[in-house]
Image 1 (cartoon, one colour):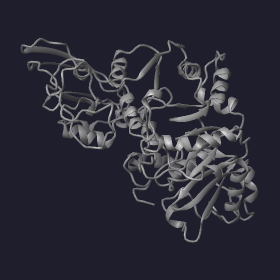
Image 2 (cartoon, one colour; image 1 turned 180 degrees about the vertical axis):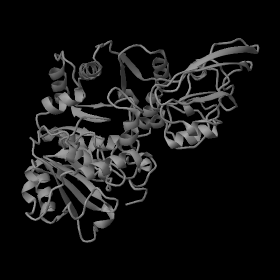
Image 3 (cartoon, one colour; image 1 turned 90 degrees about the vertical axis):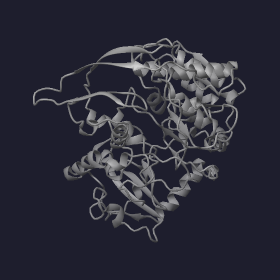
Image 4 (cartoon, rainbow, N blue to C red; image 1 turned 45 degrees about the vertical axis):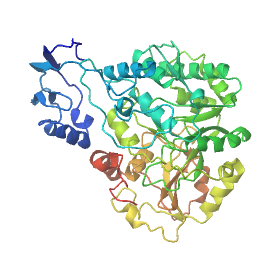
Length: 523
């Protein structure tokens, strides 16, 4: 934050101390380095392990000072102390073409103070909260103010824009919850005319603190909207597809009718571009509620009752999954209808956020939506899976090893509608979350490996092109009975584990959200 100043030019002196304790080699991806170089940095391309980097530059202008310090063999690089001064230009009115009404004066004040809001603060074509927005690529107006602050709540605007452009959005049914008062957030929501509720729910334990916010929001919504049959819950750093509400609406009747279901989740943890194919397809899984999900009010009440009295540290989604859902499952799309655009958080680093979330698949075609949701009824779905398994091609991992560069090219899908690979897991499948077999296999296939997600009694559905690709936990899964005697089971060797770790560190293109396939090719 820079100090405020009067209308007359003034010399401002700065003393900047820079000290990085994180490993910046992993924190700044290659495309960000390229962008910073284009902006004028001359040293960011050399930034590596244990180094300290300082860069002071004028937005849209020139570099004022820059330095890079190298570490020794014994310790990290020392800190920088930079002493410099610049002359500020006279302050002028921001966006004089905007009307001088209450709303636009408030927006002008907001945009003069906070950065990163893009077309909300575009002088020529500012974002409208009342009319549908068309996608456009336009440079945002620059700022000549010296008291701009880097936004902490820009995620709310990014999420709101995607919600507002989704078919079926109703702003009057949207309410935002926050644990404490935040002027920036309050000012933005006032501009957007969105209701805000402050929970004042605090806990010194991070997981419990987050859980308290979820419980409060659900309980408050139940009491404020007694007429509502369903509640949709959104985190603030999630964007949605154009048919997000259509997907949830089509899932609502089955969710209400089938007692073996508890939620409809717009997010599929296994939805990556190279292993999800059909944007119309829906699945039935033992899923966590996350990143845009809907439950009937009766289950929301179960969540409130089940978590309100817990005093120890706990994760609300884990408690819901293991202790409240009671073996009930979720409706999810094969191709996600929501995307978690986080850059880090309480339970995940920037590196993992980039690896696992930035490249996930998201349906962006407004003309495509899910079909055949009724086919997910419990008995119907079991019959469907068994019919597929009876005509499956079973992969022998000793011959067609998934932990090789050639795997996706060795297996032809010609004439094969269903592929099946068994991986070793002998624990209680109801409690299974992770083992070295799943972690290695998931890394080799380029999918979510933090823990096992989106299973259905130990069967995990992905795609290889148009073909269904089932990963089955053997012998824990009841579908293990389909394994032929002459087909082996994937049981990660040390060599396969090394291959998985190598992929983890070197497949830089896999972590790019624009990547068309895990191996840089469209599969």
